[in-house]
Length: 239
Image (cartoon, rainbow, N blue to C red):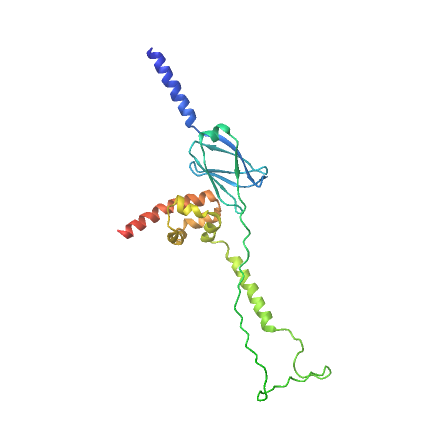
């Protein structure tokens, strides 16, 4: 009887260990029924990642309750908490929504024209200059180029070229790649703390390493680590 009991316990323990071990989860990422290539699939819990292929397919090791993140620059961020049912089915389909195109900034200025009233008998009439004689040189250039406008155009082009040479900053990398809800849901930061926190991270020399890697998993891990320091600093300041 004792031997049977020990055997039953060992079998149960073995099955439990198998159920808790990592298993390969297969899936596909679509948008409007079209497969998405090169979507970052990140297991945030296990800190592993992979990418979808040309058919939108991916495979990644998971456990129940792991959190998967799906990220692509042109699509809205997607989060999925893995259940045992997902693992048993082993064929999940993730639909991502395309972001609307961002239009270039358009500046509209309020232009006011002076009012022109009707002329009366006391009005001063300024005659128009006489039409120049094409055969006579007057010292001016008819329909000449506006040199100031040309100079201003070259200055704008030069400024754009300089801005391109400056390259991507850490702050721009974070704003372009990290989902907005990551700061509130994962890091538990208030909206007014976000900019201060990014500046805090940017001051760390390791941010330049993250900038060179341009890897979302590295970036999220770095932000998590810096968030712990940021929270301690804030609590120390309040005390």
